[in-house]
Image 1 (cartoon, rainbow, N blue to C red):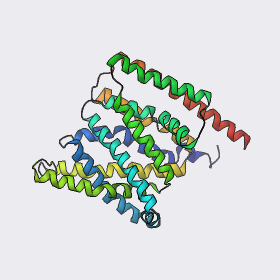
Image 2: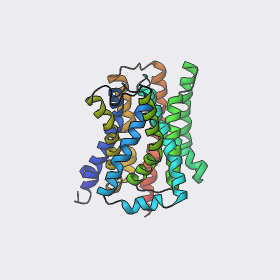
Image 3: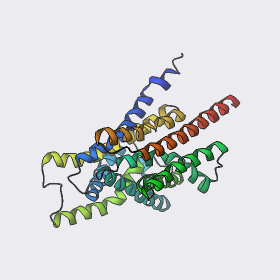
Image 4: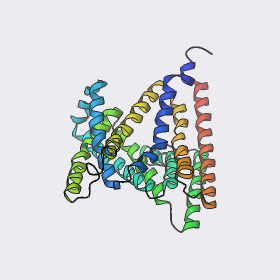
Amino acid sequence: MSSQEKPALIGPGPLAGLAAFTVWGTFGIYFKLVAFAGPVEILSHRIIWSAILTLLLVFALGRRKQLWALISSARTLGFLFLSSVLIAGNWIIYIWAVNNAHALEASLGYYIMPLVMLILARVFFGEKLNRIQMISVAICTVGVLNLLVFYGHLPWIALSLSSLFAFYGVIRKFVPADPIAGLFVECALLAPMSLGYMIWLDSHGGAAFGTIGLTQDALLIGLGVCTAVPLVLFAYAARNMKFSALGLMQYLNPTLQFFVAVLVFGEAFTQAHMVTYGLVWIGLAIFTWDNLRTARQNRAKS
């Protein structure tokens, strides 16, 4: 094996990717730790402290030019405001789901997200789905509908999480922003509303921050670190490893969410869940195989 091949397997890029997806996959445990605050207060702290930390990172990592490029364009700010609303919606639903015993369904949302993005790529960018991809989508759709048959309602948490993040990806494709500078702008756009909510909450005696203890305050402030650090790691991994490998690695996130929900939170994994997850895993396996096959063919042609 040449020295050029080793970094693709054991170098800092893959390690950074593994660290990022591990943090995202176990983030639900942290949300349990801050469950003493309400979901909207947790979201507000996540936005405000993420804005502060990412601003510091922008200066520390020399991303001021990238930041200026974003804030100097009204069109770009408009897109980023829309993306900020979408990601905030994703965050608040996930926070609520974890703290209301729906972490298992949340993990399903991140499993089906790649296929939702596949559909949106067809709708917004005209990317054609081949026969194998259509089969993958169909199998996962049957899996989702299985929960409708068993429980009488669609898994709205999973569908909302995957759809919001997929549309977020569509918007960000129109704005190829630096991930750190982009997250700062998104959080900064939402920070005034978040700060206003926290001031209102405190004036009505309902705020957790500053009223329970220093440990609880530190945990809420730590939401910014838990948001920004995996993003930095992911950005580093994207630049220092094969993107196809990074795409496969993303399944570590919902897999860890799945195990955390069942083994740590003790959520019930019913027979209906077994059928749904089985179908989704089969659909994703076919989808992944097709991606790998296409990548090999493209390399052979080049």
